[in-house]
Structures are given as structure tokens and as C-alpha cells.
Image: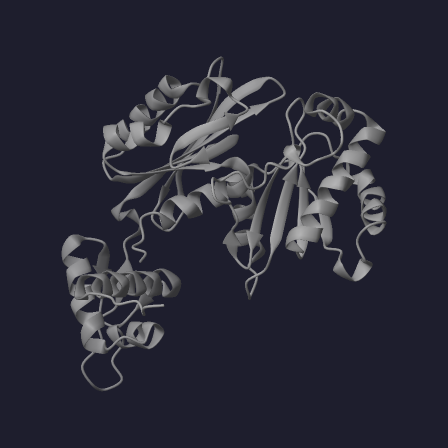
Length: 336
């Protein structure tokens, strides 16, 4: 295998990201503290900081208190240099809604709301984005969470029929000329759960949802990274071979015994394949009182030493938005 070779432009872009991340992590910093954090030279950090200050992305603060010598300049990342517009498309209990959040570049919420709509299609999403972009003059990225399969911005199987098969990502990128990411709702939910756990090391984590009147889905983090699969079909657990038709699967999920049986089989498959530290069970169908029985059903097939912690959380709006905001802001960072 040939070793990777980086040209000077790529190295510069990576160094700029290191400096920006250091400032975001430290709050404020001097050239010396940023150099120590990034392991770049003080001179390199100084050059990058000067460029970022000139662009407005970094703010030069009052000098640090002097200990006898020349006081060191302090720098702070300008979180309001830009913003991202994030939309969560949902269909729950027959209610269609879009929750939106406008966030600054460190993820702080500037504005948020939830709108219930009779119909959600490309035009409805586009109208809302156009309205939100008209309310801000520094939007840099758009993020959208979709209850369905998304590959290269094109929506496949989807709980919102009007969006199925639509090239939403390419359309929005062409129209608004900015970074657009469209992600599966479960991938974003598990990403949000994972980031809110604040693990000190990379872990494997899963979320599986059992919504009312819709097929179940799952999202996976493996060793700290989202597992989407070759065509982003990973997590479509309703296609597991339960030995019954999908129609019968949906019917059984809405009965007490049928739910336990299908849900336990789903959990066993997830545990056997990715061996997560925790599985969060979400959606409108599960009940907390069912956790002990689900755990015992899993033990019929999984040795106890390999069982993850099972937690139940019906409402995952916070985690879903956290995941989408994180992924949208990450799309603005330079990655080789």
C-alpha cells in the first residue's frame, strides 16, 4: 500500500482545523497555549490566527496579564461567524412535523421551533429553508434528518412517501450553493446519544426504535463512528428474517406478546453482530415495564457477560437534534 502524501494546501487546511478546534475547546487561548494543544509551532499558529482574525472567524482579545514580559495576545473563536440550519423531519402518530434549529458554529441554539404540516414534500422543505435563510445572513450549512434511507443525498425507502426517491440533497446544494447533508434519523439519533454520553474512549453503541404504525429502525456507532453501510441501508432492522411477512411483523409489534418476541429477536441480532456497550430502546411502542422481560428473552441466546445495558427512552428529540447539529457542523470542517 502506498503511503499517503499530503500537499502543502492540504496540510495548511488540516492545521487551520486544529487551531480552530483548539480555540473551541479552550474558549480562549494564546499562540503558545494553542501551539501546546495542537503540537504545531508557535509561528505556524500565529500565521493561522492572523488569517482567521482578518477573516473574522477569530476575535483578538485584550492581552493576557503580564508576568513581567510582554503580555501575550488572547484569541477567541467567533461562534457567530456563521450558522447552520438544521431540520428534523418526523411522522409520528399520523402527525407530520418539521422541527428546526438555527445554531452558531459551536452548536449553541439561536432559534428553534416545531411546525406541524399537512404534507411534507420537497417543496415544503424548500420553502421552510428559504424562509429561514432569509432570516440570517451568515448560514454556511444545511442539515436535514429524514425517517428513511438516504444515499448521496437521494432519499430511498422513507416513512414520508412524498420524499421517497427524491434527490433532495443535490437539489438543495444546487439552489443554495452551500454544504447540505441529509441523514437517516436513526443515525443522527444514535450520534446524538453517543455525544451526550461523553465517553472517555471510543465505544460501540446502538439505538433501536419501535414507532407506532411504522417499521422499526436502528442506528449504530461502532468504535466511535456511525455505521451506515455500503448504501446507507445499515440499521433497517425490519428486514431481518423473522420468518413472517413485513405486514405480519408490523401487526405483531402492536400486540403485547408480539412486541416482546420481535423486539427481543431484533436486540439479539444487534448484540451478536456489533456487541454494543448500551442499546437505547426508543419509540412509542416500548414500555419501561417490558425491559426485564426483554433482557431475559435476550439471555436465551446471548451469554450474560456479553449483554449490553438496555435503557428505554420514548422521546429522543434532544438526541436527534444533537446528532444532526453535530454532523452538520462537522460537514464544514476540512477532512482529508
